[in-house]
Image (cartoon, rainbow, N blue to C red):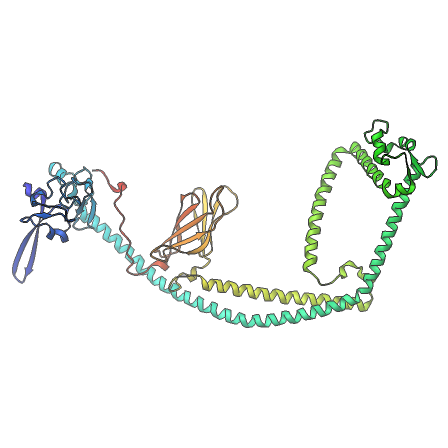
Amino acid sequence: MTEMENLYLIITICCGIFTVINCTSIVKPRGIAFERASLYVPDKDFSCFDGSYIIPFSFVNDDYCDCPDASDEPGTSACPNGTFHCANAGHTSLVIPSSRVNDGICDCCDGSDEWANNLRKGTCDNTCEELGRAAREEAERVQKIFMAGHEIRAQLIAKGKELRLEKQNRITELFEVQRDAELAKNNTLYAKETAEEIEKSALEKYKIMNDEKKRQETGKEKLRHQNEAFEIFNQIDTNRNNKIEEEEVDAYSTFDQNNDGTVSQDEKDYFMENRKEISLEDFMLNGWSRLKQLILAENMDVKETEHPAADDVDNDRQLEEGEDQDENEDESESVEDEVKYTESEEFDESQYDEETKLIVEEAKQARNAFEEADRKFRDLQREVTHLQESLNKDFGPEDEFAALDGECYELSDREYVYKLCLFDQITQRSKNGGSEVRLGTWNSWIGEPKYRTMLYDSGQHCWNGPQRSTHVRLNCGLEPALLSATEPNRCEYAMDFVVPAVCVQHNERPSAPVTDAEHDEL
């Protein structure tokens, strides 16, 4: 092969017109696409594409970079910013960086990028026909999937429009039912309030009786405490002069708080408030309350001595029960604040006469009727709100995704089970146990082309990190399926999902760029 053939490709175009055959040979530099061959004319000086220089045409592909834009070296590796065009007849043409020309690695299926090595070794076989045939078969397979998926998509569109119409009709029906339910609620509310007023009046006399009973019980309790105090006073007042004196305090063991056998001066001063004697009146007003605390403490010490472990448990239990009781009291108070129907539960219904019992029963029925009417009205409100939220969701330009609303799909890998519920939420569950982790809730469509990527955000917070979020990439498939789930960045997930709703005609999939992983050695 001559030097000219090393630097240029000679393309022969034969055009048959009737019985006359006219063949024309076109010479173009190596590494140039056919449609740009007219920019390289061998009998004219070459002008760099950026207009920076005009050089002799013999400088083209001379393995020396003359043009800053590398346009003079399309077939060599002289220019670091150059590119090489693989014709790849029988398959898809390809553009690679010029640094890969003659580097001993076959990038072009026709081997044209290794023209120098091929001359010496013949190492690059032309596999374009084989690859092209496989690519065409794959394209045909993908096209069949798209055609079948497109038919299913049409069915999804029809179903989506049908669902939208059903929801709109249902909302119209619910509005009418809701008006009747609101009227029933208002009527039962009026009946309840009227019955409760009558009930309140009927129970007034029992309230008076109940209050009087409480006052009597309070008086009895007060009298009991007074009698107990008077009895203790007489126990201490051994000389019966109606006074408690220091000598009498010394003889009363309860005042010996540290159990050392004697009542110290501090212990006496605490009880007697630094006085020499206490009268019965002072004892009843102040001294009895202080002495009662000492008696309670003394009884507690005796119990702990006899049953220490059990008492500890009992004390803890009492504390816990006290806390629970406080919580229950708080809850009861909140319930009482909300429920303002009647005070009849405070009274003993066995006291009621027949007329009062009938009034209380009628009020109870009125309350039950109102609660039922109110529940039905709120249920209708919730259903209307849910339908309106569903209608406001973006299910695609032709409602092609509407039939998939709320449908869930799972994917299991070695560690987790992922669950995607369309237009709802995404969760992750560990196979080793534990609760589900929410990876995001439905937000919107993002990116271009539209309706190809779903955003689920506002998931659970990562430990010392942001809230979790997920991007779901959609591709054409005959059956909805979750294919993959990854976490490319901390707390940011990516999923691949196939669904017929995206099988649109003339959908072009961009060709993948050439990467180092695809740069196979000879």
